[in-house]
Length: 388
Ligand code: GLA
Image (cartoon, rainbow, N blue to C red; front, side, top):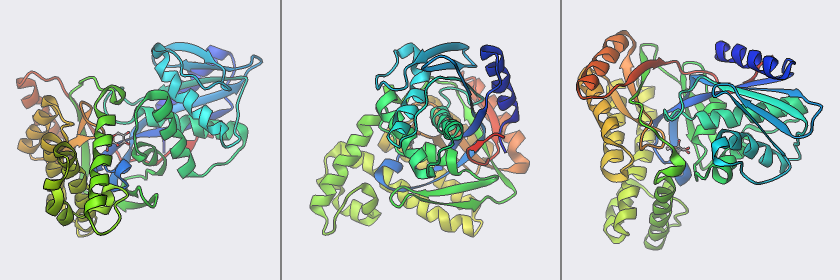
């Protein structure tokens, strides 16, 4: 299922802007990262889910060459030549995600020209819910439908990732695009970023996730995200020289090996790796905990994750720490920052029956501390789709 409201609105805006109905319409959801923070580019594993908010992308043919693109929610329209490689100027950054996807689709022989496009999203910007990945995936699905071409899901995810790297300046992994593509209704997806395999995990019926957004501005391309990636790669390189087996990425280092050699590493790289190797270990522990329905222990891993984000990876901030503490005090089973960090949202695991009461408590206690958060229940949702 998809967000029908946003799809209907996107089609209406497209029809009004260009005077014709779109012939290809695609929808892709945002995501929450449940566990496995900054593990994707370290070839680790994650638990995440697609959410009930996303982006819709519409295309129709135009008599004019180039791509005309309307961002329905700004609203604004720009145009570009899809055969060129340069980024659009910063005020049109939203168009760069689309241009980037079209650029890398070309490497697969998939080209578009002479089209009118519109996109509209229901994901709040800067909330750490991967609105950019949803836009990239929706663009790719719509272009594939329009051109009648096919491409595997992993390739589509990699095209979105390349658009982030080259057109947005963020050296991200594949988590956001995978979550948007492979999401399932009321379930988590476990992703392995070495084998690039995913599998669905059903959530117990009596739990839900809350997303609490303290509304702090957040742009990963302007954050220390890329610097953290470099630190992790340095830790992996140094561990490769110290251990008696090859270390291609932090994924190859067990927690015990890391503890035994931590003091021989560059201190900052060791600090960042503490979080990442801890996270990979926690994801694997949680596989078993979820199978056994041990929700309190699973939730505790979310709190543990936030703690090393705060102290070792240093990708939290005061507002997110406050929300996590207030969620704990309000009775959440677990809570942690979700996604890149340095802003964005907190995800909290709660019993469904307690969701409203916990939401209200968190909002009240945060308000007393000067924050103005919003909180909503997330419905884990199906992944990207063509809208017929
Ligand atoms: C962002 C990136 C992802 C991932 C997360 C942190 O969402 O886009 O690739 O690294 O941060 O886990």
